[in-house]
Length: 208
Image (cartoon, rainbow, N blue to C red; front, side, top):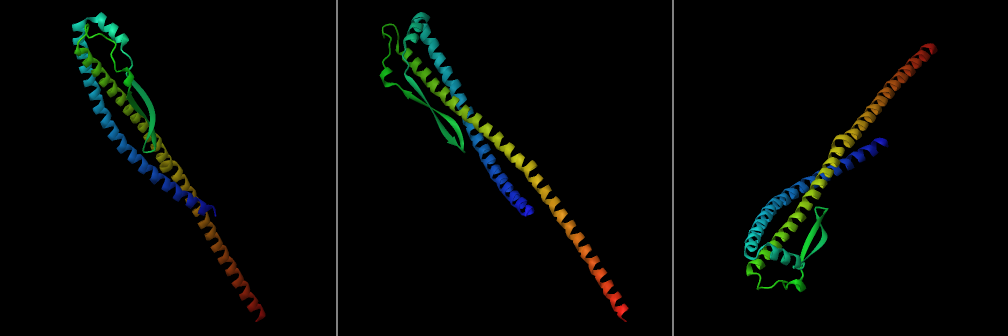
């Protein structure tokens, strides 16, 4: 009975190991894809910031740092951030959504003191911000996928190198024990048979 239970446990453990190995491999493939996207978005962020700061430098020269600072302090928040969660291969990762606030599109600065260059600068910084948020989202996904891969690997290794070998060793021990018992029973029965045959012969001889 115990042997039967152990054999079933071994089959279940092996199925669990196989499923976890499939999950691990799928997670690794997904992780590589997401990682590649992350590197591309990092390049986009660097390029966006480079362009935005270039525009800022030019505007600063046109209107001066004091006016620029005053305008910057009075520009309304035109973007709203919404944080949700999504599922990648059973792993919950953050999803950042940027919304435009339509009511804040009117700029609070005078066109007498500024130029269209400032509009371009603000636009560039908003583009850079969107790219940064996309990067933050994908970096969050990379971290969570990496954690899930580590966790899955640990579970695979526990089954592969600890649990299954332990069950197999126990099965071997029980099988060996049962074989020894069978062997002993066989020799015991053989001795009894031999003894009975000998007594039978003795009775026959005595009767003669």
